[in-house]
Length: 308
Image (tube, rainbow, N blue to C red):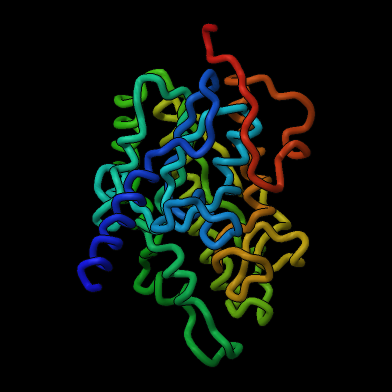
């Protein structure tokens, strides 16, 4: 029995590794699209799990939505918890490097990365205070003690590493349109204490750090000839403080199926539409891309590859 369980475990790991590079949407003559990144792209706990359970990836995440709108052949290797090192290394010790999905036939690459490298979610969790001031402590005070800004320093240190990522993507996929997708508006100015238990000044500090990370990603994308999708404006009014029917991000206690402090299905539809609009020169889009964004996964329509 123990030997049998061991064989089943090994088979499960092998299937996960295989699924990691298997195209998750098929269109033989469509745009070849590779989606890379972390949980902001993967969509953990959103209903409709991808067969690769190690990555907590949803089949209604923004890459899938964008692929459907573009009629693209999608290979989604985004993975929850991914850091820049996981693009070249084996996340969880078994998954192929995300770079391995790229090739000369790749037409489109999207990438959301960096949040885990600077530990943004951990920083946000450290800001939780169940009691109002002056009880507890301010995370903003702790991160900016002594005239420093710890998160800003981490973001600045990440920039040259992100430059290397963009160079490597270009080397492996020389003909691809590269689209960097930033992080959005998780918290409105002042937050919404006590609905979400983050003091107003801490909410502003965390969101300003998210904005700094996105700004850095956008600046480096432009420097390397890549396009940038700024999800900040897309998600204004749809933050974790919004009504359940309006929010794109879930709060500490989710009101729809999604991981806390992560996009929900509604947000992924909006973000996928924004990505598709940015990459719309790769395929013919008709009508309003937001209105076309599907609520459930479907096979993408087929479009001719460039040059056909």
